[in-house]
Amino acid sequence: MTTTEPRTERGTHRAQREHVAALHAELTRNGLVTWTSGNVSERVPGEDLFVIKGSGVLYDELTWEGITVCDLDGNAVDGVKKPSSDTDAHAYVYRHLPEVNGQVHTHSPYATAWAARAEPIPCVLTAMADEFGGPIPIGPFALIGDDSIGRGIVETLRDSRSPAVLMQNHGVFTIGPSAKAAVKAAVMTEDVARTVHLSRQLGEPLPIAQSDIDSLYARYQNVYGQ
Image 1 (tube, one colour):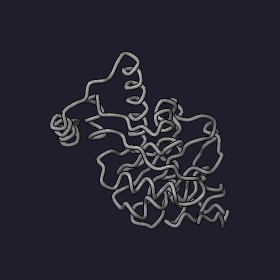
Image 2 (tube, rainbow, N blue to C red):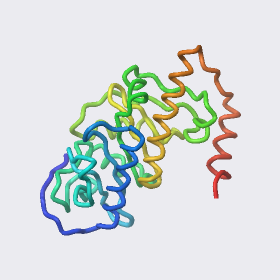
Image 3 (tube, rainbow, N blue to C red):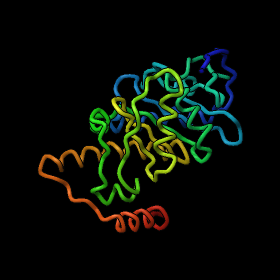
Image 4 (cartoon, rainbow, N blue to C red):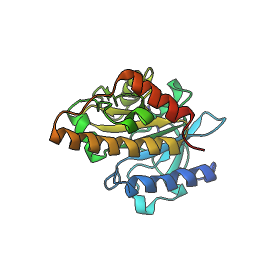
């Protein structure tokens, strides 16, 4: 269970905290968050620590001092801000998925509408095959305040190629090899959630064959880009 002591500022990991604070601007720029909801976290390389947005800190006022350093049990170890209410969930994911180095949580409207229906987003777009390797899955309903959400994330994504999960009645959680990659996954999740929703207003979207999904995913992950 997360504790918030000590509430002191020693300025450790300042460069990484500045980087993570800056990444939050992508959440507002892409319309993924409202008021103070949502957060980005990132594992500290080589240490059993991660940095995460302080609870209830306004995005317009977010600086490195609004990012708190926590251990992998979710305890604050540096920073004057109480860490996010999702800290226990992030900590659980970092403990159980060592390949994950960044996480994002949003309540972006289209994706969260799918979560409210407990309905996975079907893989009917090549962009989804590229980024997610299949549908975006639904995770179980879980209350905020302990590691229940983290358990649901791990259970849902452990054997999935998707970097995103829609937690039932809650919102979007994404993972990645870095915080920036997790932010990209959150942006893409909202984009495809909106497009697939619009497609369904016109009729039933056409599925993509699994073999084609596999081919698209392999190309994008291993060939695309510089």
